[in-house]
Image 1 (cartoon, rainbow, N blue to C red):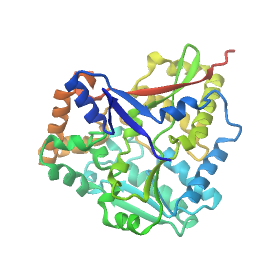
Image 2 (image 1 turned 180 degrees about the vertical axis):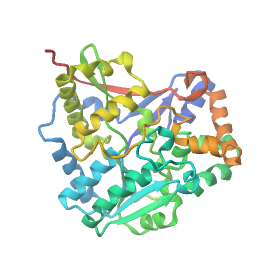
Image 3 (image 1 turned 90 degrees about the horizontal axis):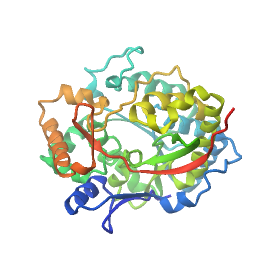
Length: 382
């Protein structure tokens, strides 16, 4: 299904959050966000689907396999994409291609290949300590699947230097940290483009994220964040390919039953473990709480394929100044690409002040979230 996400300012629609906030600041109007709102508002989130999560995951992968001629899975080795991979494997469904990206050329001298070093600045270690080992474990089960591993280093530096100034931000949906500038721009690579040229119906399947949940007035709510949707700008790269589609595996209207079931499973987990409920209260809602506490806790709750002992670094809790990009912001601070990146941040910070969010030290660090939330149900009490 087409991912219908857009912003509206004074009756004008924008795909880009950057452009929407810049325009809203210029005309002194408010920004609204719509993410498949008509469908999600009509869906009954309080009614738990009868099928198990694995049954729903498997149903989703079967539907995708039947819908497209060529399926490409964007794989990181994280819990979301690994769960998708395992759903295909346990059903014997063919995945045409798995695409993995990394920036080893740039970050190789900065990473520490020590399983005990899980700080977010060491995210580059995941490629060697998690992504590649997981693929090696299953490659004999999917011998017909093409596995493509892409080093995006050149793409990243080309992306900034080709613009030469702050105007690069105008072609972004939202993510302005270096990793997100190129993370899903697979159309940059000739071999990937060739596949789009020759296949009838192609889909890039991405996990996006787990459901965000919060307890308010003793009710559990699920909410979408626009940052979660905007983290994948891949559809912008594919506009020249009318036969291609971006499929959010979990956050698509076609996957609403998956999201709903995940939320009800999380609800029961919190009811069975009331000592954790305080962490879900709205007053504690923050990037740190979600990324460092809630998310690690719910992985094994909603994904039977996940092993908590596998290596993963801490998630980044900053936005423009993501800890994942420490290799770039510290190691390449004298490079022209870094200067152009900073010029872009400065431009948005100066011209969209009303919509900025800040780090504790007062540094601008991204644009404020827009959310859509839906009630799941009342928490049972003991």
